[in-house]
Length: 250
Ligand code: OAD
Image (cartoon, rainbow, N blue to C red; front, side):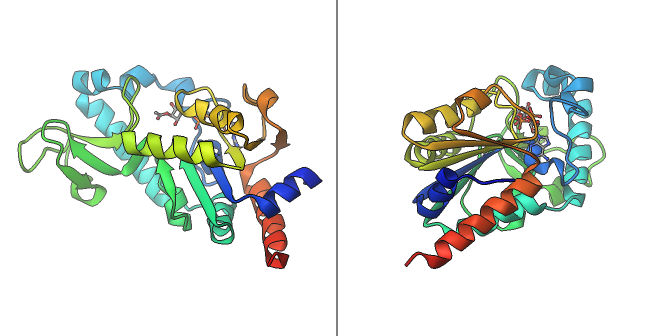
């Protein structure tokens, strides 16, 4: 991949870099994406499996689907893309990851400043009293786990269709996007709002907008650069350029 002079300069000089990620960054770890070839929503119904109405109608079906995903995600490892972002954070004064993923792979790779817009599959809470539970506490249950305090049903702490994003994560993400000098949109189809508005917000506030994806998306024509390819190959290359550039700066 040829990294142009403009992007090299940005990598060398940017005070604040934001990496905005979607399911595509975890594809090379073996976590299926939602859309496109092999996408989860090609064969599963989101309104049945990822909504509060679906959970209230059939808690067992929804819980079993998430218990299965919890087990799949627990088995996979962060890939070269996640690891490159974690290394980049150490080289830049201000670096934020904003992720739509619930798989916790950024933190497992070593990223520290991570905004999770759609929750985290390693956490759970009671729908009645809000008490929080770890996966270890709930995965042994036969069927839907029940709250030890109030006997309510426990659900995964992920954002479902029709639900608001967590306030603090959203507000932090907007602030980071507004102050970014370089904004990398990585492995997202950029069609799910409000998350998909962040690259546009960043660009409107002066960020250089770079998209990394094997396929074009609706964002591609607004991006300043489109780096076509898998995150696991493109991000280590960007990280190497960043490392070389920052090494020689005082
Ligand atoms: P999608 O499944 O919609 O899009 C995945 C994107 O990753 C596509 O644009 C692929 O071309 C790209 N891709 C595939 N392999 C890749 C690779 N190796 N490297 C880089 N990119 C690759 O996933 P999201 O955009 O994350 O919401 O979906 C957004 C939201 O829709 C999800 O957070 C989820 C879903 O419904 C909730 O759960 C609330």
